[in-house]
Length: 243
Image (tube, rainbow, N blue to C red; front, side):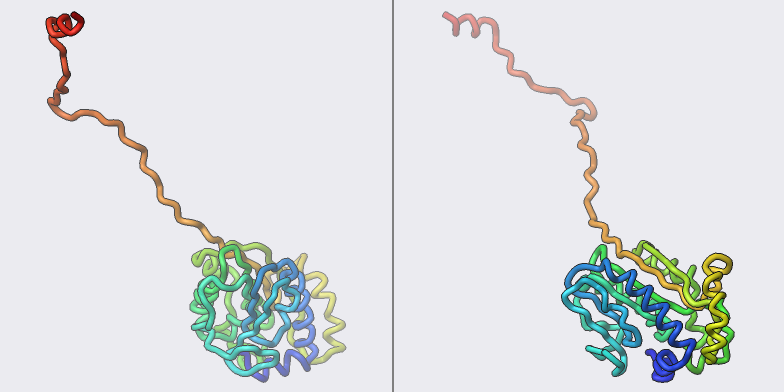
């Protein structure tokens, strides 16, 4: 679960606000083309589901958080199978003890061709080595490599749609220094894309209908010494019938 210290750091520190703004832009871009009836978000630190074009927008958390609608266990979501059109995970995997199990549960509740949007901390970034890691940020072992996450999604049946790296500056508290280092963000996408603090990806649950394979019809062919009886009318009988 996302802890209170992280929530406070996210909304009150210079680095947290910069991260929040970058991810809000990502969520706004990726969710604006989500349509249907229901979209859910796991964790209430972001307003990630706000721009989705759906009738119901539900935020589920494991503990009472800001903007939470339902408090529940993420490993057993109180939703029917294939009942939602989109699921958004803003660092939900980073703060969960069993991220792969959580993805399986997400796959269960998501409809075929439904959207999955994820953001996660990158273990190849400067943030991974920050002293804040394990205190405010999730523990280092919760930083999931992007390649590993892609493997998990592919095994479950997701197809990657889009992806983006975000926030290359270190998690420093000095707002003036952070503004000075903003040139790193401008150059990061071009020179060091895989070293960003955060990655965001969008995936689609592919639903393949099972169709039975029809075997080709076999032509009838007699096997062995098989004879066919024929009704031969005797010539005399045929003559008498004519007469």
